[in-house]
Amino acid sequence: MKYIIRNTAILAALTFVIGGLSACSSEVANNGQGNTASTAPAESPKAHRSSKNSANYPPLAEGISQAEMAHLDGSKSKVADRKGKVLLLNMWATWCGPCRAEMPHLIKMQDKYRDQDFEIIGLNTDDGDTKEMIEDFAAEMKLNYTLVWANTAMQESLLKTSKFDGIPQSFVVDRDGHLRGVFRGADPRELKKLEEAVDQVIVE
Image (cartoon, rainbow, N blue to C red; front, side, top):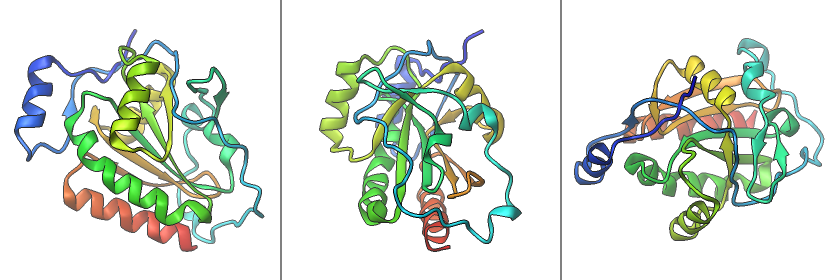
């Protein structure tokens, strides 16, 4: 059974024309092959700082933390490999207008907190996007964060967690691997909440 977040050509066109749309919705699936714009980082070299608030939040589902994410260079990594970092997992696709609209905000967040063990991981959800397409898209958008391919199992776990079948959607994970927030779509109010959540978790 496949679960690919893929839009029809008509919906994709409308997404760009109608600026008010904040998310792309449709069915979800993946072929398990991966893409990334950078190599997988190792666990943070800095001492692990446990958040005093972590215990109040649920651990990230194992189907997300232990899923293998595939990179353009053929390497693979897991969210669990990054314990000690604050993570923002962002589901996206090249054809998604709202995904494109939120990317400047993600770029600014990555720049702002790069030296504080913060990493954005862009989870590509479309098996139709080739390595070259993703590389060209990343160059066009000047993306400065990690891009990987989310396999089917990981996508299913993410959608089960968010109870939302559209993209973009983002998940904030603290240094202890606990889920600290789910953010659906690219509405300005949702983006503001996302930025506030990252701000909060970073300083804990």
